[in-house]
Image (tube, rainbow, N blue to C red; front, side, top):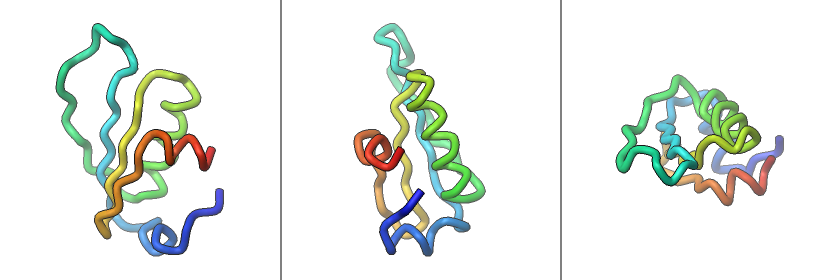
Amino acid sequence: MLLPEPLSSDLDRPATLTLWPDASDGPKAVEPEDVASLRDALRRACAALRDGTAAPWIVTASGLILSPSWLMSIL
């Protein structure tokens, strides 16, 4: 997976991952989870997108916000 330059420096730094359930009867609030690295967050986010179980949002250590649509574009 090729990432834009700003993200390359964040790959091994911590990130925050939020997985919003894709069901209409799901929870109304979800707590973000600290993940050891952006690499791990991307792996989990892409798995959720492929499964269709959640809409992932990632915030990188440098403050970039990666939306579900952006994540889909790099799959």
